[in-house]
Structures are given as C-alpha cells and as structure tokens.
Length: 571
Image (tube, rainbow, N blue to C red):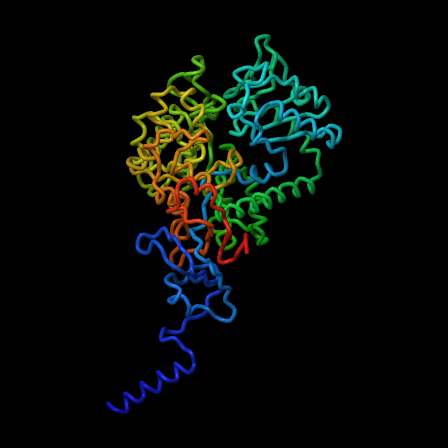
C-alpha cells in the first residue's frame, strides 16, 4: 500500500511539474470559442460558456475549463468576451440570385416617393449606354409618404419616368417581386399597347382611357421581362456567366454579414442549378445552399431525378425540392382570396399557376421523393394547396416524412389553420413581413379576416405545425435580427402592435430561425443547433437577443459568422 501511495504521489508531482491537467488528453481542436454566452438550441444543454471545433464539426461544449484541454499550438482561440453565439441563422425562404442581383441594380427599398424614384432613374440615365436597360428593385407604393398623382389604385402613371428616360428602357421590380413598373420605351420594346390583353394570372393596369400606366401585375410582368431577356441574350456567354457568378458572390457576402450560414433558395431554374453545381464542384460555394427547383413540369419530369443532389461539396449544396407559385402578393392585390378585397370589392386576387398544373407537380414530387414548396399567401390559395397536399398524401400512404411546405402561409381561413398540424405541412413564414405589411393588411382584408388568420404564428404552432423563419430577400433585407424582432414584438414602424397575441417567445423565434428551418429542409441532424457532431455553423452577436429589452434587439450586430469552423465574416 505504501509503495502504491508513493507511486501516486510521484505521478501527481510529475503532472504538476509538467503543468498537465488532471483531465484526459484530447486531440487539439482547430477552433475554440470561449468566455461567451453560447445558446445551443438544445434542451439538454441550453447554454454553455465555450465550445471546440475540429475540422467542420463541433467536438465539445462546456465551461472554459472543460474546453481548455482542446487548445493546442495551432488552435484558433476566439475570446467572445461575453458576446452571444447562436447556431448560424438559416434563411428558410429567400431568392439567392435575386439577392445578388439586387446589389447590382438600383436599390429602391428605402425610397419615400415616386418622385424620388424618378430622380434616381434620371441619374442612372446620365451614365447609361444607349439602349441599356435601367433596372431597379424594392419599391412599394404603400410605404411612400404621399400618393402619386395621377395614379391607378395608388400606382403612379409612367409619364414622369418616361420623360427622364426616353431612350433607355426602364424596369423596376416591386418589393414583393409580384409586379414590375416599366417606362414607355420598355413597353414599346415589349410590344405592349392599349389593345394588349391581360395574360392568364396577370394584369396590365390601365387608366380610364385604357392606356397602360406602366404597372404589370403577377404573370403580366413577363411581357416586359421577355423584352429584357432579349437584351440580356445579346451579351456574350462570358458576360452572362460573369454576371451570374457575381450575383453568387454578392449574395454570399451579404448573407454572411448578417449571420446567415445556410440559405434556402426559393426557386431557381434547372439551368441555374447547373451553375450552382459547377461553382460547388470548384469549392467556391461559400454558403450552404439548399435549392428549390422552379421549372416547367415537362423539364422536371425530364431532368429532376438526375439533377437532385444532397450534401454536395461538404454539405454546401443540396437540390431536393420543387417550388411552385399558387398566387400573388397582398400588397399588389394578387393574393388569391376566398372573399373579395375589402379595399377592392371587384377582385379576389389571382391564381398564378393553374391548380391542374400544381396537381401534376405534386405527382412528380411524390414519385421522385422530392419536397414540394408552394407559395400561397391568400386564404383561397392556402386552402387549394392544402387540398392538393391532402389528396396526394392519401394517394401515397407509403410515402413518409415528406415535409411538404407552404411558403408564406400569410392569410388563412380559420378552418384551414388546424390542417397544417394535422397534415404535417411546414409553414415557411417571414416574421418581417408581418410588421412590414401591417399598415395595409387590415385595409386589404378587413379587421375580422386580419385578426382571424393574418400571420397567426401561435395558432399554427398550437396545431402542431413547424414554422420556419426568413425574410424572402430581396423582398426584405436578408437580416435575421430584423425578422426576429418582428417575430417577438409584431411592432410596426409606427409603434403599433399587430395582433400581439400571436407573438413568438424569444426562444420560439430563435428556434424558428435555426432548428425549425433545418427541419424544414430535412437537415436537422446536421445543423440548426450547437451539439457534438453537428456542423460548426455559428453566428456571434453583440447582444444576447434572448434577454435584452425589446428595443435593444434591433441594435444587435453580427460580429462574426462561422461556417464549418472557419470565420467567414468578422475577425
């Protein structure tokens, strides 16, 4: 016994002299975050002080002392100095290439009047080449400080815009993405006249004399966009490829600056998917991109099965979903409603894709084991889509864990709210839309319908539905903090609260932007929370958004963004 005690004492002395810890030795980590408030979104260990990463995976979480053994000579140790780290935000519904393009055209999101738009276009004309199209994005007539005159339904007549740009065609996309504004030159190139009829699912707004005012709603936008496409097609293949890659770079850069580590792209063509694959194969896809394919049923049947891919390039690209649009947007009165608009009794909105076509898409999705994601904003659109889903599920009882989604699910009839939970349909919603749209929702729907079914997060969650959060960028800025704030306060810009009983708790809102969003893409075993074995995708915030007062949430900044254990934004 005496010799054994002496041996223990010698061992202890040697460890002390060597400065060793009594903890077992481990392979050093490549990255350690310490001295912070690390919110894991894991019920078993909600908050820790430090974590260790090896390669692109989390290998340990705990206190500073518990993680210290993972620090080696080559470990990148980041002292959070009390800042908050959360799982990397997942943008559950955005337009990836649209986000990149929005940084290459006129930014109209903050304009306060039509006159301001005219001035911006006039400045762009000064440097534009002859015949060059002037493009912009982000205007919204409901957010202007004054109603333009003359106007139709609050939309301005094109004359002032055409005057400052007589020779350069102009196309300006509505913030919602569901309407465009064009000048006379653009309409001339598109062949649009007073005699041009409305296409199915779209509308050319005209004045009392029958003259197009320049606003093209829903599918009618395609009339002008085809003319733009002709101009784009005149570029060399090299120029078009450079433009597309620049869009990817700019979208990635913008997302990383906002703490977004994964981006669920709401609708790209099979041709764009081919580009994504090329970029990913080159190791140049920095963000984790999950793509919904948006193409014709014919092309989907022909190419979808061979284009599907999961976890390509170290989990940087997945193509495993289909996107369809059932209706338009509320702001442009394109959302498809069961009853007429309160402020436009002659209209119930627009069904933008025939339901027979959507039923065929659902068959393709079921046959190929692909998630189906259908844009539905109005209560009629949501009901019709739920009917298609229910019929498809009944016809395919062997298909399990489909996780089909409704994108937006903004305005619901009371009878349809429980169906989300009953059918297991995911509601991919955008918190920021609630407060951004609040000023005109009641005008469009009336008070009763607005209270019954507008952005009813608590009602949906009580039905058992999973809600995934996002921004619909570039409809809104790709800013999770702004959407998180809207989700927990429902406070509009004027300070009014839009049906506050439907607010999310702080924890619910964070989960909607992390684990829920990962679940909505069948990726919850890889990401969405900070746990051993999961990808080391992390956003570091200047403030603890779970505890600071409401009015401090919008001032929170992203100080670092980490993807796969590598810092991609911040120091």
